[in-house]
Length: 105
Image (cartoon, rainbow, N blue to C red; front, side, top):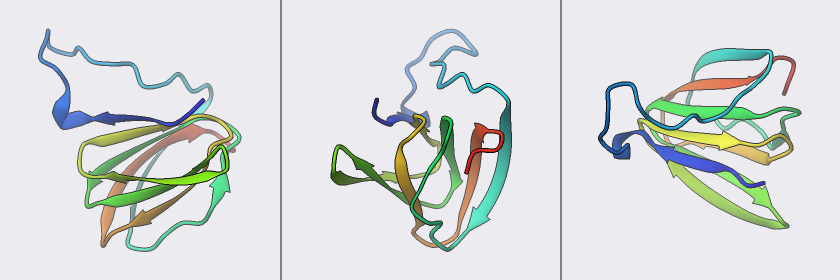
């Protein structure tokens, strides 16, 4: 299973409060974070939803032996399945919303 990217600014029109369900995460913790430094390569034991509120973040992913980079801006949401190896590298200061399984790295 690979990561899924949602562009908040590109949601289609429709009834109010409509849009995609991103993930169902049991025993989730919601974190509001700011950073101007990269995290570290890691693998979460559960799913992770990573939303950029302000700034830009280059999310590096290792999938099937290859590395790819997804650049996220304000309003972008990335769903990472359990076991996805990744590192977030902000491009300057960034404000983030992270939702992940409690106790996950």
